[in-house]
Image 1 (cartoon, rainbow, N blue to C red):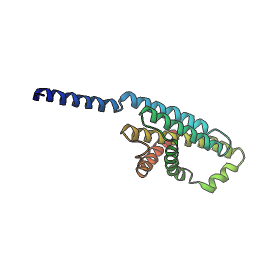
Image 2: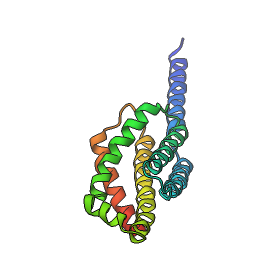
Image 3: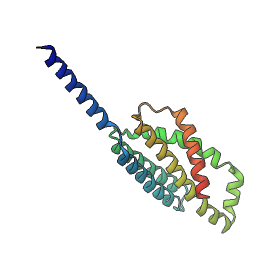
Image 4: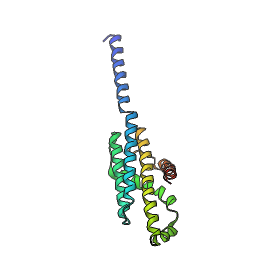
Length: 174
């Protein structure tokens, strides 16, 4: 093999590597699709917040969020393991819930007041569900877009990001 043939083959290999690398990077269309997925499921999450049955509403919201994570994983061509997705989701939502539900016993007392409590729940839970779904979806989308997977999630870092995103979204919906 002459040195020119070897150089030509090395260039071909380098070109293939660049093509493969750019083919796996998400482009602007992927980012727009991810935003659309997060927006779509945020609305469904908010809708699930209207379910008037305690615990059934939480199960529906979690189901919407798991479905969103599945769709985002599919978009970014990252294998989705439902058990890992659930664990990450529960951990991240555990960050949001205490700061958002700080009313605790006072909140429960207000919700038990006829009419006023029901109206308060109808307004707050859907907004909480939509904001938390948006926050989790946005942070997961950013993680997947940067080449991350469910196996390499830095939960501590993501907790901060989800909390910030949730606060920003909560302010927008208020």
